[in-house]
Amino acid sequence: MVPQTFSSSYLTGFMETLKFAVLPGDGIGPEVMTVALRVLEQAGQRFGFRPDATHADIGGIAIDNHGIAYPDSTHQVCEEADAILFGSVGGPKWETLPPKDQPERASLLAIRKAFSLYANIRPGLLYAEIADASPLKRERIPDGIDIVCIRELTGGIYFGDKSTSTLDNGEEQAIDTMVYKTSEIERIAQVAIDTALGRGKRVCSVDKANVLECSVLWRKVVAAYFAEHAPQIELDHMYVDNAAMQLARDPNQFDVLFTENMFGDILSDEMGVICGSLGMLASASLGARQNGRGKPFGLYEPSGGTAPDIAGQGIANPCAQILSGALMLRHSFGLNEEADAIETAVRSTVEAGARTADIAFGLDSVGSEAMGEAVLERLA
Ligand code: IPM
Ligand code: MG
Image 1: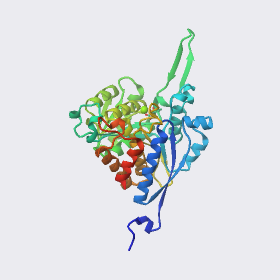
Image 2 (image 1 turned 90 degrees about the vertical axis):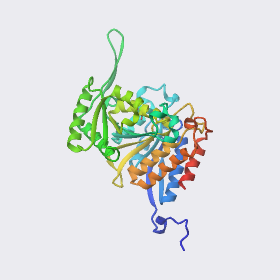
Image 3 (image 1 turned 30 degrees about the vertical axis):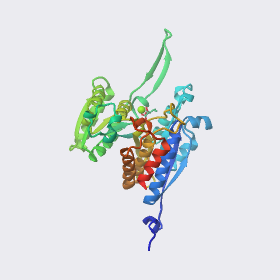
Image 4 (image 1 turned 60 degrees about the horizontal axis):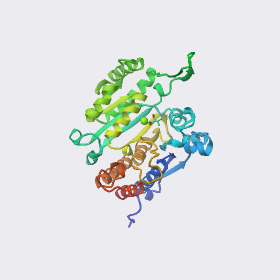
């Protein structure tokens, strides 16, 4: 008789190894990463894979240890991996450095560019059970929220030419340039299409075409691309100011919210707050590069940042990091069932009332580790 504890892959003698880079970064990054890795380990035991994680420094900790936010050695670790599980970078300690050397620009933006991770996918999910965590009235979101933001991540004003100068009259001046090319818009339009095909088949493209040339081009290219490649998808266009308002008024009117880099940064934070807590929001950043398994190489990170105010206290919500791990399994390793299992475990943990402080709302709250334990129990 076969002992129950032997997984089928063990019996066939094959334990799939998942090779990924782990970059915990700063602030709450390392704490929530520890919990997320435990969850991946356990998912591996249940489903028969072995996480092979190589740790490296990035952000402020890399400045402290190597004198630079994105060391070559860290880049090399990522080059050799099939995906990157990222924590978060930055904090007060490094805020006095010149802006271009600070962790956000010198490491996070640098790594996005280095791997051409142009497609940022941010699911905006609020479980009905924690609808009270949203600042929106419950009657506006009786079933919670389920939308997704597709943000262009390697173009626009983030990466156009920048300069500062002092004018003849002694005033200082700063310039940031917003640039988009047709090809950059088309490739992210395809991601919006693919995402919408797996959901409600509706895309709202957000721009500022009444003011910006980049947006005029964006709207024209998006309209033509969808007409040619995805006529079955319902495409709308909306100005970004209106989109910000609509998101606060009735988020579920959207299915896929699709936009350029800067607008996506702002709207995805708004989406985060209406979904209750940034501590629940995962994200995937994908590019054209395929990994050793013929899947998209990607970087997976929580949307919430380093939360310096609570770093080191063991109370941060680990769910966004855990869910980022699930996105990694799905996109970069093609492990859909495994990703679903982790997502289901997180959801049922929250439903059962285990809550970190950010989503507790009157219930007793638990720390990051206990929250992780609760997820592990459900995953087992
Ligand atoms: C995000 C963050 C980053 C961004 C910062 C940290 C550079 O806000 O991922 O949304 O602006 O893209
Ligand atoms: Mg942001």
